[in-house]
Structures are given as C-alpha cells and as structure tokens.
Image 1: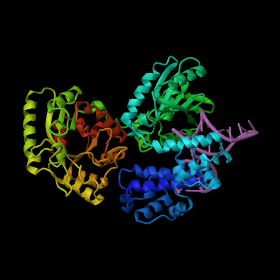
Image 2: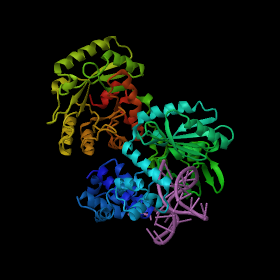
Image 3: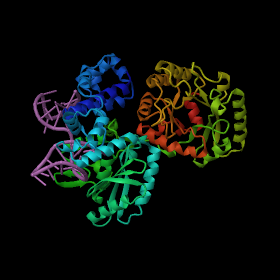
Image 4: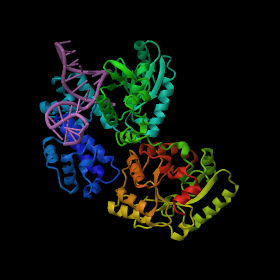
Length: 576
DNA sequence: GCCGTTTTCGGCCCGACTGTTTTCAGTCG
C-alpha cells in the first residue's frame, strides 16, 4: 500500500468521524496523520518493515494509528472503517462538500429528511422541505441549490500558472483604486502550490478605515472578471470569478498587514503550529497582530510577527508544517534555489520533431534568458507521431549542432535526446548512438497503463543504462487532467541513487513532477534534481519559474539542483 | 487520537460572516 493510499484511508475516516459529530480534535488527529504520511519522503511500508524504527516516532502518529497503519500495510481491513462505512450512507460525504453544509447540518438533513445523496438533497430543496428544518430557512435552501449546481460544474482547482494570470489581472485592476494603500496576494497561490483552489487578496485602505475598506470592496465588486459577490461584511468580501474560481478579499489596518498576510498565506497547518508556539509563550496571534494580553506587540510586517517567536520569516513555499520549524530551530533556514541560479535548460524540443522553433532560435531565446547551455532533446523514433529521430537522423541533428556551436557566442548547445523507454523494457536507441550524446533523458510515453511492477521495472532498467543521464517527467501526470502512472517512485529513486542518475523536475505548468514531496525525498537521498522546461517553443522556456517554485516547496537549494552548475561541473557530477 | 521537564489528563488556533436567531450555532479559511 502506498503512502497516498494509507493517507486516503485516514482522510476518509476523518470525513466519516466528522459526519458522526465526533470530537473535532480526534478528527484532526486523523487528518494530521494523513498529511504526515502523504508528505513522507519515503515509503511508510519501508519504515514499518525496519525493526530499528517505529511508526509512532512519526509526527502525529501514536500507538493507535501506528497499529492501524500496520494493519493496512498487512493487507488487512480496519474494523473501525468498516463500521463507519456501514453506518454512514454513501453519498453523505459528497453532500458535505457543498459550501455551507458541514457535518452538523448534513447530519440534520440525513436524520430529519433521510437525505442520503445529492439527488435526494436537490429534490428536498425543490419541494421546500428543507426550509422547515430547525436552523434552515428559505435562503439556506436556495444556497444549497446554487451549491449543487456549482458542485456539478466546477470543484476543480486551476493550475498555478493560470492563477498567476488571474492574480496579475486582479492586482492591476485594484491598483487603480484611489482608496487602496497596499495589496498583496496570499493563500496557496503565494505558497506556490502547483494548483490553486481559490484566490486570497489582502488590502490596506487609505484614509479612514471604515469608509476606506468599503471603497476598496466596491472597487473589487466592479471588476469585470467578477461573476458574483457571495458574501460581504465590514472587512471581508467573498466572490466568484467568471471562470468559477473563488476569491476572498480582506481589508485590514496597516498596522495589521503583516499579521494578516502571515495568517492568510497559511498553510492552515503551519498557522496552527505557529499559534501553538505563541501560546506556549503566553502570546496570542491572530490576523491583527501578536498580542501579549491586550497589547499588540507586532503586526506591521511578517518579519515582525515571526520575530516575536524568534523565528525567521519563512519563505511562503515552506509554510506547510513539514520540516520548517525543525529547520528554524537547528539554525538558519536553507537558502532556497532561485530562478537566477539556473544556468541551463536540459530538456527542450525543436522542429526536428514536435518543436515549433529551430535549434538556432531556441538557443538564441535561451541566451536571452541568461542561460549558458541548452540541451536539445528531441524525441526518439518510437514517438512516430512527431517524426521521432532514429540514429541516423539524430547524428545529422548533432552535426548541425556542431556547426551551430562554432558560430554561437555566450551559449553552448548540447547534443541530447529524449529516448523513449519502450513498453517491453529497454530503450528506443542503441547504446552506440546514446554514447555519443552529451545528455540523455529517458522517458515513458507509451504503455502508461501498465502495472506498477511493469512500469517500475522499465524505469529502473532505463536508469541502469550507462548512457542515460536522467529520467524525465518521472510520473507522467498532467495536473487536473491525467493521473500519474502507477510507478514505485521510491524504488526508482533508490535505483537513481545506486546508478548515479539524476531525476527531472519538469517545469511545464501541467506536469511539475517531481512534486514537492518527491523533491524533498530526492534531496534526502542525495539525488541531483534537474529542472527543465520541456519547451517546444521559445516562449516555453519561461516555464522555468514554475519548476523553481516547485523545487522551493521541496526545500531544494542551489546545491540540490544540478543545472545551477556550469556544464563542465554538471558533467563531472555525472561522472563523465 | 496525539502529546507532554510546568502536565499521563486536559489541553488541542482563532476570528469573520451568514442565517436564523432574539444571543448564537454552524461553517469557513
């Protein structure tokens, strides 16, 4: 059983317990455990199998949950989960995902009106049976119907790159507001999560607080990209953008801006830890500041807020309550990799296969971006749809690269290839031609539906080849579109370490695999990560920033990312 | 359900907004 599967069981238990109205802290314990296991840099099964180690040493895992993990790993079922599933009708969990319906109200709907599914709920609202329930009314009924429609149509998150576009447009609109003194995005967008579920904006109004904040909200409400305002109070406005994405705006006093930014950036888990630490010191942190008794002692900036607890101002990408507090305690935080640290791009395509620009144009664009080397890695022949290269065409391409390098200044084009890992195992090109390449990435495009064993064996086989430099997009996922293929990434990483190979973090906004957790795992194993754009046109090179953001979330420093080195240094790292 | 040199019991982050309430519960982030 994989970490994700164990975590999913605990999350499901948390949902079910919540519906039953159990102690909320017990519910949280299951959610924390799910998060811990999902974020683990190695397989939980490996820890369980190691007699030297104990599952209960993991954060948030005690005796009870350790036993449950053992049961799950042993292939057993959890009697507790079976009981819960028997007791809680299938379908009520879906109801709890409708905005405004939590465990209490869903339980009331279930108990009083025998509502067990989204269909039941719609019918009950339409026949006005819901409004007669205690605690419900006509407005609740309508809100539920709206929520049902919305749940059917949306629910999905948007890519960080798309969110970035929306945020930039919103900020540019808001900067025209005369009543605005300051504005900043917060939430998962600011933390750089690969997908974003809603947008959070934080503002300070100029002038008198009360009328200022009303003016700021009015200005946002007039934004053309806004579909509807769903809630509005003195300091907070909630809305939905035309595309369906939710948006929250909070207006705070200037002296609270840092505290509010810290608070609304989250993550929730990070904030819970932070407030716990504050409490230990007799302090209270809320979105208005840090308080000792009734006295505010910090709040203008985030540095100030963290400073009251002798903590560094964590980069937002690290605020997930994983290792950051531990790191801060041990000394200075790692200096995370930055876009400017990157010296080269090691996965791009050209018109030789499915790229849209010549090698020369790609090289020029890379140079403009300040890169010093660029590996052309067109597809191998198995990818026939895009006219993938056989050995002879590949050598022709490399001859062109040799000629090009003679006249290029300031950038070196590397002779590379993206060789396919074949369905039956083995690589799509022979060793003799691979041996002539500067840089070889191996990747899986076909046979993605194979079993975990098959795919993992193929990947490990590729990493055993002496000419392969790195494995590209190691999970094959397409965010919001396609699940990763079944691959034992732990086994792949162990193989990469054993054979001295690198792993790619594909910077394309749809891919971004390795994900942050996998990046952290690679780091802990000492496997160099290569951030590459996989771009098919000059503008695609701009995707590097998305990859850097993901790497930062994984805690990677310049040292952990191979292509922050010069090409000669990188070659040395490869043992060539 | 977890956790702990102030604790093995009694804590576990904190406030805004809504709707249905006559003072607050539920939900959300």
